[in-house]
Amino acid sequence: MEVKIGIADSSRELIVNSTQSVDEVEEQARSAFEKGNSATFILTDEKGRKYLIQSSKITYVEIGPADSRKVGFAPS
Image 1 (cartoon, rainbow, N blue to C red):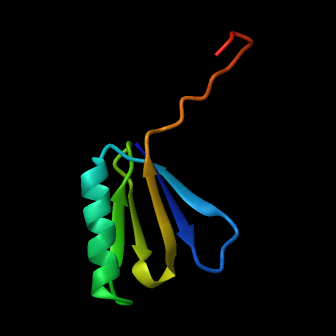
Image 2 (cartoon, helix red, strand yellow; image 1 turned 180 degrees about the horizontal axis):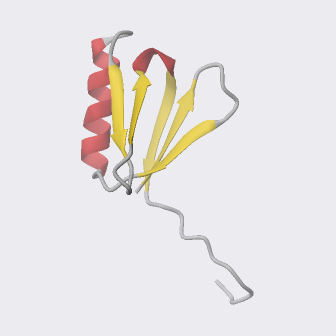
């Protein structure tokens, strides 16, 4: 699953491929937002790396299936 996180004062978004379920990521995001500025949103990627983001810096969280990039000239 792909998670895109918008960061305040940054023109780029953080994109993480995670093995966590949609419900797990959504619950963690909601919990971090409800706790306020001192909360931390923690996300784990496919390789086990953890990303810790201060909730006050998050502008949005987009949760969806990982894009399957097609390479070549085959019709889609």
